[in-house]
Structure formats: structure tokens, C-alpha cells
Image (tube, rainbow, N blue to C red):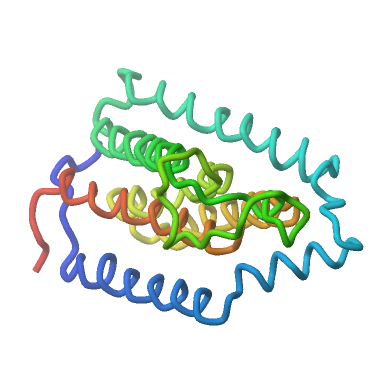
Length: 226
């Protein structure tokens, strides 16, 4: 039987809020200061003779991109069903937490894309497109864009498994985190190689997919442990 008195760990906001925020901010500032978005995208573009030769690559486009969507659905839909399974009623709260965290992360990122106005690398003039380069911090024009990284969110959304494990089986929290990070990294790098996203787009997606479950977590816990 599950213990329904899920507790908020001591110094939760320090270790799961402040420190990750500082780390992610440092990474984003480094990317902006060194112009790594442009440098990495240009290197990929030039490596193929000034073109996005991998844009239609079978593995990247069909297996990782399209197949990744089906894989996400194959994970999320059964998870959603488990919430209503009578046999798992003692675990309903953590299951509701996980499904809600993943859902809000995905929706938040796709809503941001609707008005960010930040172009994909393959749309930028210097990289074979027709649009001016717009950094993420200069975006939000109200037009649809490529920021943050939507497909990577199908992987990074599962970092919520870290908090799910923290609630039920803390000893499994790091393997759970590695699963989400690995999925997001695979999906994200595949899209970067295709020219669909800059590296900062993926970092922001990871940040959103971390802080959504982090902020939701206390709502499903009762008190701070001693």
C-alpha cells in the first residue's frame, strides 16, 4: 500500500529551484555571449557543403522525429489510463502529478512557439533561408516560430519522472532523470542536425520541462521533512 502522506524534502527549493535556475542561466548566458547558436548551426550547415543535407534524412526525420511522437504517445496514453485504474488508486496522486506535469510542459512549450517569432536555423538568411537571425531574447513578435524546441519537449517532459520517483522511490530518482534527459537529448540533437532548432532552444525546453514539475511538486506534498 502506498503512503499518501507525500512529503516535501528539506531544502527542496534550494536544490531543485535556485541551483538549477543558476546553472541553466549560466549556460544560456554562455551560449549568448559566445554566439554558440550561430556557431554550432553554421558548423552543421557548412559540414554538408552549405546545406541541410540531413533535413530529410530517413533516421532523423522518420525514426526520431515522427517515430518519437508515436513513442511519446505510447508512453503518455497508457500512463493517463493508469490514473483511472481502480487497482492503482493508492498511487493516484503521484500518477495525477506525473500526467499533469508532462501535459503542462508540452502545452506550455507549444503555446510559446505560437508567438515567439524566432526562426528555425534552416529559415535564417545566412543558413540558406530568407529570414533574419533572431535570438530567443529578441523574439516574441506574436508570430509563430521555432522557439522553444517542441520535439525535444517530448523527451525532456519526462524529467518529471525524477520528481515522480522522488515522491515514491527516491532511490530511483537519478535513473528516472537520466531517462528524461537522454530522450530530450536524442530528440533535440536530431532536430539540430536537421536545422530545425538552435541549441538554446533545447536548453529553454529543458528548463521549462524541469520547472513545471518542480513548481507543481509541492502541491502534491504535505510537509517538509526534518
